[in-house]
Length: 233
Image (cartoon, rainbow, N blue to C red; front, side, top):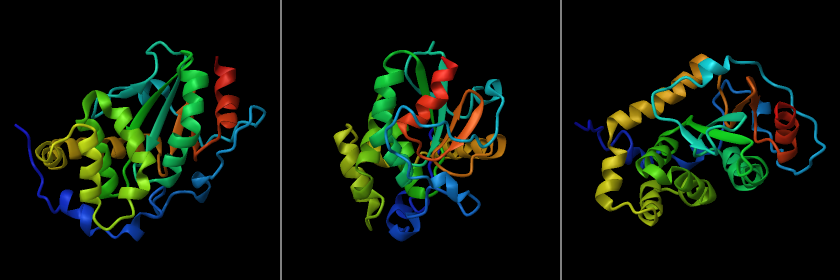
């Protein structure tokens, strides 16, 4: 049985949440300012950024509340775990600017796989991830579209209508759109992914990446990714 939430909790809040409240959604109040780096320049000679701690990779890769969404070959020697928020401008910058280079250089060549995990800071980010999850095998395609069109739904007054328009292009009907955003179990699972990242791995800002057991915060450039990844290959 699919449990439902009231429309006020997700669907209704899409219209009620002030757009201005989302401008700082890349970090909560406790998040370090450094985590919102604007570094997106390309360069193979850049130094690796300082890590913000280490984690147990076995624990990090243990199954969580939702099935993992993995981009790349299962046997890739390097795994990147990314925590992101759909309303985070720095996450959008990474996915539209740096990720295509990361994909071409490392993922398409079988060297790296990327696991994306939900870390929403607000109801609109939750809704975006829920729609991506409901799109099944179109998860990464939906995430890509939502990041590329972020300005058209994050900062508008009626995010619900804007998201419905985007969702229709991914094959959603009005009914499936409403069913997705009122699925309480999915909402609770998305929130559980965020809670686990926060409590077990110290995630407090987006994007946050875990590579080779080390934690990195901020939208790193392809040069910085290369400096981290290459020694692990």
